[in-house]
Image (cartoon, rainbow, N blue to C red; front, top):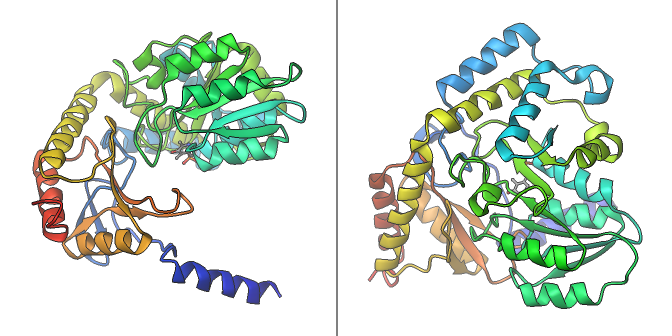
Length: 390
Ligand SMILES: *Cc1c(COP(=O)(O)O)cnc(C)c1O
């Protein structure tokens, strides 16, 4: 019986300290969140620029809702593609320096759409072991031969590329910034390998878009990679951009193919036009409030330096994702609970999201934080982990 089997699986997950629970937030996303009537300092959202609650995004959404209503009414290919969606696609293509961009309702769907929509039986997909679940799911769903290479290991990838059969397409897929580790993929070297072995390269820039690069255009801008070098660029709009949704940017051929063949694009209702309007306001802020990126960078530097001098086991990352490696599930949960008792929210990330034995506290920084917030977090960690903070 399904019910009995499910009860057994839930019990097993609980006994492994892997049970997941949701928190009910009663406020907008800022550096402070209210929860059960109490205010918490939080280091767990992906609102890296601190704009999810920005008055300009709110205003844009309200204005667009007044004009376009709430629901988009249909999928993009039926009659749900509004001029606001279209305008946003043009802006995204412009900002990323690509011929075109295509909106998806979520990043998860964009990744399924690209990989499973463009590749199939007889093709080859090579993914970094630590790629986001949506990329791995896309690889499996595609029906292509799917292999995972060692994290950020170019030698391992090249060894695999050398032994691929001649026929079929080849796609190398990576997170540009790894979501649970915060380190970056060596995109320029990956682009060279892709070229040498006649493969295409796809990067998921969920954690770089809006944050990295001179204008906030993300990892491709950070490394100066053109459409030819990085032909499939995916980004999300619910993290750094403070809004919701995702996009894929690349050639005219790529985008037209996605419109024709990507099932997660075709068979779903378009995001509300007002959400696209809010995202457009978020893109305006990339230009007018560059201080957010600069402030975030200085907070990252401050956190790293302070954490290192206090002896904390912070993973090597230069991005807003600064995980503190713990190891065991129960231990990570206990530290997170102790922080919460002190009024600080940091999520414990456990298997199966990360490999067994690498449970961690995923600390995320945002432009909404101050150095005093970071001091408060580190002081609390010193109390909880006195041996590390000695
Ligand atoms: C969050 C995330 C996604 C999914 O994006 P959504 O818009 O939240 O569905 C995809 N890839 C990576 C690397 C992510 O971190």
